[in-house]
Image (cartoon, rainbow, N blue to C red; front, side):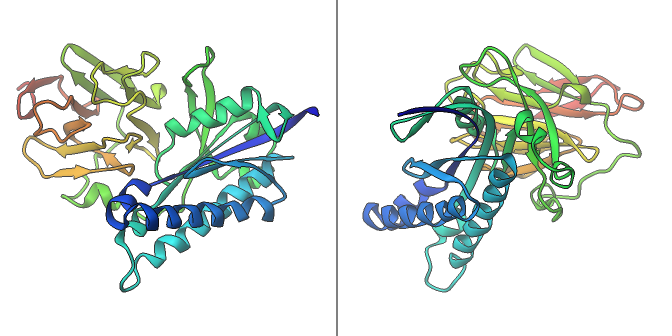
Length: 324
């Protein structure tokens, strides 16, 4: 029987499972991943949703309304945190601590047939996962519109994002996490706060030299021709990394399988994001698919710009300098 209804579609994808197979072996890792997916799937039933199917290390579910879908996504993250906490116990596999999850939701007319679901909302939710960072929840404007005001306030806009296979871009919002400080950004030195908010950011890769102001956010760096900053290199994912504007700073999030690496200054230590995020400050180099020291990996030079006191950037092999 075919049924067509308005639905909120949720996709969840578990990351870090590859490391489990490397450390635990196939049999035990399969058991852990299956158990973890089964655990987070309980959040679907708890919140009145319908589990459509599991997808190896992920799942798909549908909900009557957006609020239940968001409630379920939040619950999934809570359940995964419990799994990660077990990895800190004595004798537990360190791979458990590396487990992360991405969740994406879209809303629209869905065709339910033969126990499966089809439609534009299904396609959009599935492909939004490409743009989600570790433990992020992304939603479309249609999902946001169905939320009460107190829940809407927990989301911030990422503006229009080009989604693979869709001609029209999608207005995407991300669920903000409670502020815990920017640990990643400060591991290798203090963030240099300017007296005013940045006006823009400059990116240079080969002859692709562009300046983006805050109105251009988010910037997607990737191999896809739909990426905001297109880097045609085989080591770069279609949507490799994303630069957001939030709280008066630029934030870089790795979305890739090969990793994103950041070096601040001309000779600073290298920060490996690996599906994580950091605040961009000053100037430096972003390595896509390999650290900046890897001659084969594309390296994008960046500078956070304050137009009142920053001179144009000129590149050198080891980093960035200013004219003076």
